[in-house]
Length: 306
Length: 306
Image (cartoon, rainbow over all chains, first blue to last red; front, side, top):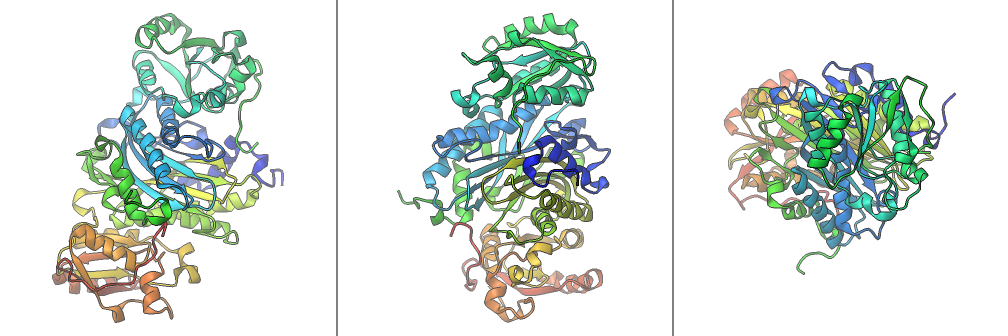
């Protein structure tokens, strides 16, 4: 066998792609699918199901104690993060979130107050971003606490953003600042860029977009790969959080900012409009998409199972 | 405080109901919701979203090693069960499944062949029941293996079955045979009653329906409570799997059969039609719904966190 014997030898993308590809082809391929996880997109995008011709967005995600939060993390922040993470994926598609299902698996000796705090943080995030929590499950787990959230969302076809539409020459932008998220606690209280993404898709031709969860160094190559292009990043222009280094801004992960590509012709109007609408959120052109293979190397960001 | 200090003092229903009810009321209450988990229904039921006036069904569920399967369980059976369980909830609403999102959290030293086997079993179940697997996530977990599945489904409003429509005097039926599921391995290879449920809802006025996952002794009181009625069960009529006792048939859990209530006037035609369409699946009238409080006691079935 030419493949790793255990999962630790796989990167996450490669593992999911390979395993899903092995499912009966008829199961994963369907003309109703605009995008699925085998393409590496942030959400599954389904056409033909929703009223009014909109695309249905589907996303599930889970946070696990010891990995996405600690035993010492305040409960409300755990709940907030559990919902905000998949909301960031809905944002990456320029979608509007609709419904959430929540599964919590906790050890039986978990204090009731902690379970309540998790739900409360989740509820605050749901109220803030207009998500309807329509169901919940509990399960007992002899292991780390785990909260899984599944989301539905919608987006009109002409505004739906994927990773695959980037073109050589496009200007590359990121929202906010990068790096140090775990150390600063940003990863527990970030605001998914739902409003910003929908504004972008409404007013500009966003060729490709994704959210930065594993670090620019891991995520930008995914966008470039999906778009069939290369990339060049001006490292000194990277918007850094506080005093983090360039490498940290590239590799730390859990930024939950938007990375997107637009025609360079749109860049000036984009920057001008952004400043008016989102004066408190940075927007930075960090580089451009290039012909395939022409891009510079970046240190790799975070990779699951590696 | 009048409530248990840790989760072990709660039954699952009570915990989920209480925690969800504490979310901002606007989050859980919405006129688009026909049913949500705070009602205890098998799926969340959303009106107004899908094309053609159908209801959208949403369900998430997870299986955890040591609880729903063992380290020694063949991988393909784990995958089958992970999808078949929430499919059984779609069946309980007489729905048709549409899409699945799959999250697997496995220790990094999991053999690749085992991960592949889990996906393969899941893919077989998806192909068998017409489910489109539209996305997947992997996460590394220092704890028991966990597979979470989220499903969408659809059902026409006039055929949608909930737990809440049962009436005093209704005949109570169960499909299949009950008890011994963990010992026999039935819980790893059962076929969710999707076809049977849709046939029932098409041809008969099913007043209330649910699937039996925690045992008749735990589940029937939930249906009765949701319907505001009591119940009476003829214990000697319970369809038992193999040589299990009456108590086992009532308490064992993981039967994944349908429990439903119809007018007694429909019972003869129902039994006659069933025999023609599903000659290999038992259908048994096990008792009836009664006026509130008039029902007999049953030993309790399985309860999470207790």
